[in-house]
Amino acid sequence: MRALVHALATQIEELAQQLAKQGEALQALQARLAQNSRNSSKPPSSDGYGKVKRTESLRKSGKKPNGGQPGHDGHTLIASDDPDRIETHAVDTCAHCQASLAGIEAAGYEERQVFDIPAIRMEVTAHRVAVKICPGCGGKSTGNFPSGVTQAVQYGATVKTWATYFTNQHHIAVERTAQIFDDLVHQPVSDATVLKASEEFAVCIAPSTEAVKEQLRASEVLHVDESGLRVEGTLHWLHVASTSTLTDYEVHAKRGHEAMDDAGILGAFSGTAVHDHWKPYFRYEGCGHALCNAHHLRELQFIDKQYQQPWANDMAEILLQIKAAVGETPAPALSLSPAQLEAFEQRYDEVVKAGIEANPLTAPERKQRGRPKQPPPLNLAMRLHDFKGQVLAFMYDFRVPFDNNQGERDIRMVKVKQKVSGGFRTLEGAKRFGRIRGYISTARKNAKNIFEAIREAFDGNPFIPSPATH
Image (spheres, one colour):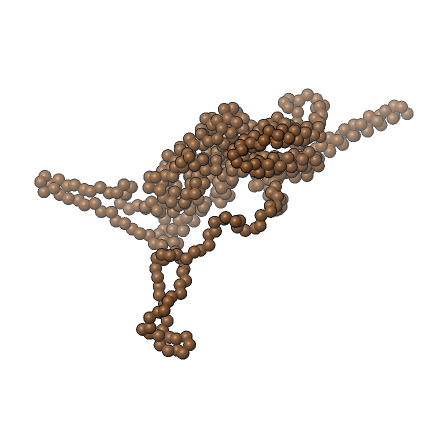
């Protein structure tokens, strides 16, 4: 009987261990299936149709009413004091007695204005240079054509500006851009002409691209991010380095520090780099680092819902309370007060400790190479513990933002191009598009008209932001 009871006890213990392992595997599988772009670092493209409710958001309802806020500059159509053309419509008959009003002077006018676009057509300019024969020596002399007029027949700067604007700013396909020319100005333009315009434009903006890189290297805070991009049918990486006034894009076959070194910005940067904890960024020790708390909030939301661990919700509340305190601190303060810093740090440490204690790491049954695998809640708790200074950098220095939304917004538009085109056929084409989008994004951030910025670049005067603006 003793042997039987002992055997049964051993069997029950083995079954319990097996059940525990199956439970852990099932929880890990459920957690992986529950991850999406709203509660993790996964890209939106991985969500699939119907997987994510698009109404879910980390944002809380504000107190401001919908619509334009006080002080907002509206864009209502306003009558012009100096119209381009005036059409006067006479009244010939009295509306009351039907008497003739011909020859009667008008007592006044009522006016209504119509804003419209005049018909567009291609304008051809023939440049002629005089050819003269010298009466003294009989030699022939020819005048000089304007700069840029090099062919017997060619397109002008405005046509190139249209082509570049449509394909790079609005991501319109090359064939459709050529169709726009045919429909609007009745001039068929070849696909090669459209492509060549972008190639020429990338050369024209080279001084601006280099100036932006130099200003990014000298900035106090820099947003960096990366995302996958399909080039030549294979996975490449789009890297962005940006501020609120500057943008630079680089396309590279690698995701890590090799690509960052080739971009030539982080190696010479000495300010604070804001990113999403991608480890290669930490190889750059000459600058400070700040971690994106929007990522942390998404992961904390996932842990709270999937693992039902209260500390995750507590940590999210603390981060948002610190953010609110930073927003409420009046200028010229550059950080929270010592008392606030101490109070928030103490609460932060207590919640991190609770997160670690809620996820004890069990010793592996047998020795294995490398670091033992840890559950997602413990991984996040340990990251918040080990990188406390980088997580809370925004409360120590108000120049550092709460999140890396600037970098994510800047990278989003280039991803739209991939959705439209499906990818890039050549690496050089992808790199060229990155340089052009960097120029366009920088111009937009500095309130520069995009069409004018492109035209000025073709005229030899690319837009270069002033270092004083940021």
